[in-house]
Image 1: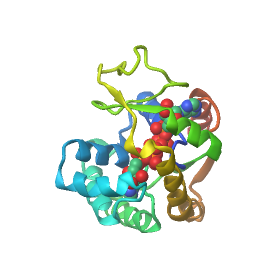
Image 2: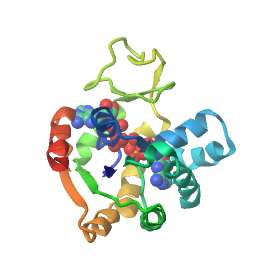
Image 3: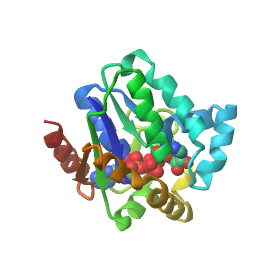
Length: 213
Ligand code: AP5
């Protein structure tokens, strides 16, 4: 199964990708997580990416394509993958098409997570992420068992720098201008299925499962 999860920041791409990964054991590829790992390790790539991420802007396409190309050539992605947060521009989508063609792979579905702006702002301003394993929590809807401690690895939970209200607004604008046009791009290829992402995570997941079955 080769899937793309598309949707605005806070639509629940990360949460749904984790649920899919658990159910089907398909690798979850999140460019956001990969970039945050580079930032945490203070690599040159991470230092460059951080400047864009903190402003809510997209990281340049060449950096992203380099990371993705490496990932898609790894053995465990041969049978399938879930792309979360990639592609995010038409150029990235075109390059992905070209890459998959060269690897004789095809996309199965693009799942479009539809969610209201109000929900997104509420979810992002209350999100917490594990510093160590990047697991996603929410202080209202998906609380950890112990306050500020990751259930899975006991790492410390933190609030992402780009989850401040002023940056959230910029990220939503960037989504509208640069990423939303991809829905039309994939509709032309007959790959898009819309899913209501305003629901509880498990309910949205059930909708996705119905589509995949
Ligand atoms: P990235 O990390 O990809 O962020 P994003 O796309 O903005 O999406 P988010 O991670 O904010 O949201 P999500 O949809 O995954 O929601 P989540 O499941 O966490 O990218 C960050 C930055 O990196 C970008 O701004 C850019 O700079 C750069 N970047 C990354 N990829 C790039 C690319 N391809 N090209 C260029 N630049 C790139 O859920 C959110 C919250 O809601 C959580 O607290 C969760 O617990 C809660 N929640 C989720 N679902 C539900 C539900 N159904 N009900 C209640 N609560 C829920």
